[in-house]
Image (cartoon, rainbow, N blue to C red; front, side, top):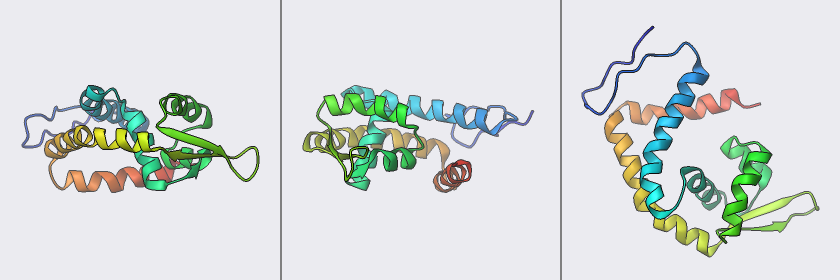
Length: 153
């Protein structure tokens, strides 16, 4: 089994490269999620909730289907995740052009929560960036976007 060499930053552990892309990606996602969770939980926000608020901030008003596609989430999971954010008043919904379409939008309270989360998110982001170093940091976003696109149905 191959290993990923430790960079010059002592925070990086040597891990074996698993023979399955899914296993490697899920392991990385869990580890990165823990890093962001340590920061965001200080203000009562989960990384998945932050991602939804951030995506709606970027997209503006959008359908649940478009949001699910952007975040690669199935409808059932997205509905469950949105429920609490709607209940907290961070996301508003309204009916679209037909009864089946549901439009989502960040509320003022959601925008405030996103702004409150910003320094915590930035701290987690900076920690990962420092641990990875260059060029890995720069390559990561593009490569992960390519992986998501190649894997999309």
